[in-house]
Image (tube, rainbow, N blue to C red):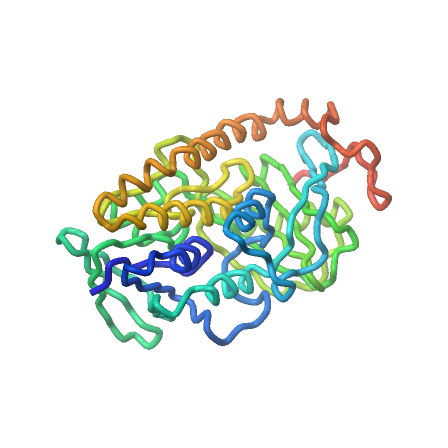
Length: 369
């Protein structure tokens, strides 16, 4: 039997496993075979793979520096923002680290000490938390079954969290789908593109140059027609002057977007949640890596004094982080208000005063979908 079973080896799960107090016996489970079969950028989560300043700060706090082997050029220092309805375009200075997301996950997993057991290629399909010691039922890559008994379950399994669903919370009205595709050809414009169009989504679309490809994505509320809306986004970007070659791949993944404080659920003994499984993600930008890293560090600290009362200590330590998420909810209500966004962009406040040489800030003409 284990003291702690961590479900999900993304940034939250691997960070918690790395920081796990040595007096606790821990198991890290992930459905992905992150130990072999890697093809750069061709599999994994539909995530842009940008480390925002908040994530960079947390990595620094944890004493980590990003190795060059996981970097994916170009590095990005500006956001090209297009509001289709207002026919406006602006460039805003931002500082991101552009990484290969799967390589990032593999790197964090490689830092997990040997004292933590790992079980890769196995997914959790049922959780029985009615007993004093929860039981996880697993399914292997070839259909084999396994069971794990543990004293504490940590859900680090992202937006579609099986562990969160076992608490009866699931996506609970905050559910979106992220669709991302890669296209041949490196972008001539080294910008992170943010595309707002209420006719396509009440969230936003994005473009990211990454190596010899350009990644395009969009976040949509759950429902039909997601594939067509993605195609419409690609068409719109082409009209805005983007150069996109032949499609290389298309991925989709569930995405959370909290719209009220109740969408953040940290859980309590014997089941707790970290990262996006807990609803810890920015409602304005969908940035979640910084929250994954922070929540994992705080839970590891709460476990230093043992399992008893760890959930309560975790919730107390997370108060500033939850407050940050709530602040992003309020920010999103301004940013995604059509009138407010138009006024901000028209004002040019914080925008680059001179348009980059390859583009001209101002109005953009877009055909109606």
